[in-house]
Image (tube, rainbow, N blue to C red; front, side, top):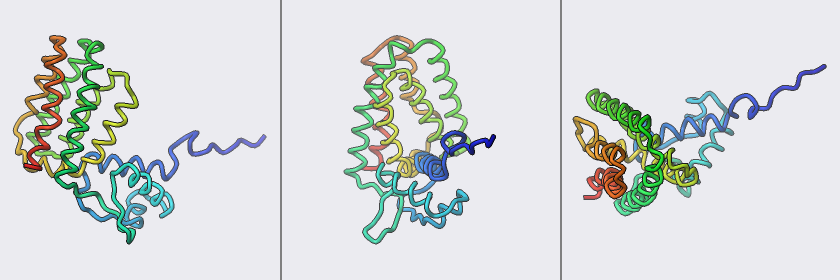
Length: 217
């Protein structure tokens, strides 16, 4: 009897899916600065694949707004205009406030304790001046809360906005000169403990928009 060879989707991600996920994560975490040119050859070398899966991954990321492609075919991370930053900040305020509101009735103490722990980790990476670590743990804080909303389509929309903002968030981190975790995280946690929906909505809205305003100010 001949044992069938498993398809990539049966055992491991396909080459283009692996490149897509890996490159997507790098962009979301700000590991690639705004306006950085990327080549299919370079992407293929980084991920150990041929140009075909690299091209397929790039096409998907262009469709998500994570990469831009010029008429000449040049691929790069986008440099966002002030208007675009304001638009994405407004989207964060709309989507994430709603996600937090929906999560509130399911915010048990274990979740609140988990958020407190993540916030402590954010303080650690700030002290280490680890920009990528800061973005990663900050997004983990928000994602952990929003998962309790049980609204996967809405969370996917939020993650697309995070993706488009990733390189810009790295630039923003350089301006903030933070020495401790965002104050609004503490307000978010306090509102969750108190079951205070208006306070939670205000804290989330402030948290996701205040920093970005520095870039357009």
